[in-house]
Length: 373
Image 1: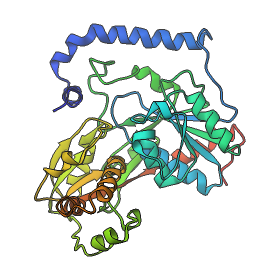
Image 2 (image 1 turned 90 degrees about the vertical axis):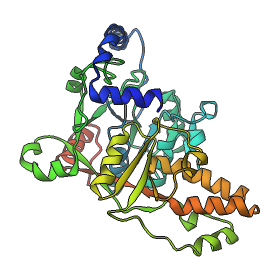
Image 3 (image 1 turned 180 degrees about the vertical axis):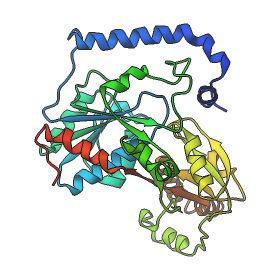
């Protein structure tokens, strides 16, 4: 188990030993307070884009459902004929190749896994760079008709001025011991929620059973889609390999089956619980967030299907396609790769927003003359 996984478990369990780290949390809190104050006083300057910027992030370490929310918002805005672009830090990508535009052909190793996933699902213009100004400038140079930019994360990146802030809060996970890093998993104090629009990520059963209670809150849920093969035939160009894949007799994992659940996301427990709620008997395999998977990570999980998140699937898919091409003339290795492909499945999720979330979005965008028809 990695250190990241150990401390994540400690935060969630509110382990007593974490209080020994409190002096470090005080120091961390002083630094982030001073840094923000310097921006507020204009001593440090922020870049303001020529179009409205909407930052979507969280105040906690680990996943909160931010990326699915962004994808759903982008698709909603596209249907409303709003020209929207996305910027991201491109975590896990090659910073020496940034700023960079992201397309459906981009590699996670170059631009990051989350931007690849957003590009694949939405087709929106996306640019990545740790320097958000450079990402925006590249985006607008190539897509000058963009009306709104959504920043994937960057809530604490005060070098970027923002017009709208949405903070995603995982209601089921909560805030642990409510302490700043490293005693707790807060990036900023809870008072930060007062400065932004807060979207509460609830589990679907909570939303269904407590409609009246949550009616005044801005709520999203993650709804799982059908489990699907990780490699689809349209991703394979070689005719001989495609023929071999066509000959497979795949049996989709179903409720009651035992599965290996492999996850390299910020809060893997949510993924495991989702699979369990779907009726699977789950063997949990948590990896650190943005884990750089290798095929050897997966090949020793035998006897049961392997189900991964969409975020992890974008990286694993690249590995499999490269291995197929490299080993297509080596029968023994090819058999191993094909067997692994037959074992691998993806569980996509879709963010479903309550109607008042869209009402709030409409009000915020109308201030910038962006109207949702």
